[in-house]
Length: 462
Image (cartoon, rainbow, N blue to C red; front, side):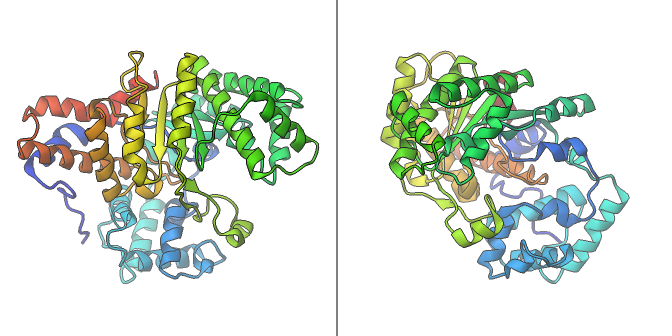
């Protein structure tokens, strides 16, 4: 039987009451994920548990590599069953890793399987889950609706096909699927396929031969995104670069269009200006900005060549963005163009610096206008979430926090919200039992409900 019990992670009576009376049944607003919208539209039945559980989930792939599993059983030609059993064997001794918890909860919640995940039980789990899939219509729609999700913000490049979202809306699902605007492939001017990406944007907008043309094209596409309900944007950079001059960014773009390869300095000049331009554009259209930084990407060039992007070979960067972030926010603020901003930081050493900076740019237009985003990626584990809450409450205001997201490509990732909610309830419940805060459960419970769902609804103007 599974070690996951009813009071899992709920360390005291106050935490248990907060979770079961206030947090547990709140809907989920997933304001940042990487679910493929076409898969949600097609809504095909899954054939086996591997397709739902392991295909495309580089969190799990990374754990298997750390266990010494041959790539053949991760992304190679091994059968679905062989890969599944290999993962179960690797997970069985991964004590303390969040996947050790998440995977157990996922099997229990979606398949009613309470066997402990390990090599010994792998075959039985495979059979039990596949038997469930055969007897039930398990589709993207059924998984999302059974998770009590009301909104899904996918992450989409500027040239993605938006008719998919219109078709999803016609399906009449119990949840909304809305694209978040992401221009990373247009910003990353040093990328091998950059001119191809630029060409895709041109096909949908206008000829691009200057920075003015690029700005017009990006605004045109943002307007198209807004027409299908877009409320959020996403920017992902390793670090925040200084805001450069428009004419300098124009020179870099023209040089690349002429067939030249940009230097590292040129790339940073271009990214620094485009980041500023995009955030100013988002403020103009009241689109919230999700700014992710602190990830050092594609460390293993051999595997990048073999498998491509987003396959589990990124890590935490040690670059310090705080001064450049300060100047970027100040410039936008002086121009009355600072959008609602959620800052996701991947390096926990920077938590306090970022939290204290956030407090310098709040204003009365929105509660928690500048957010310190939830523990993200390598930090969305028990230790990372607890530290995030400690730093958030020490220098910010927890009552305005917009809560958890999945940031995942897996349809089974929604129990991560409940993982976070249990940790949140234990954090506040412990303070209550220590006498360090009010014992008014109705008041604290209302704050928990806001963090779980209500604050996000208000923040994104849905």
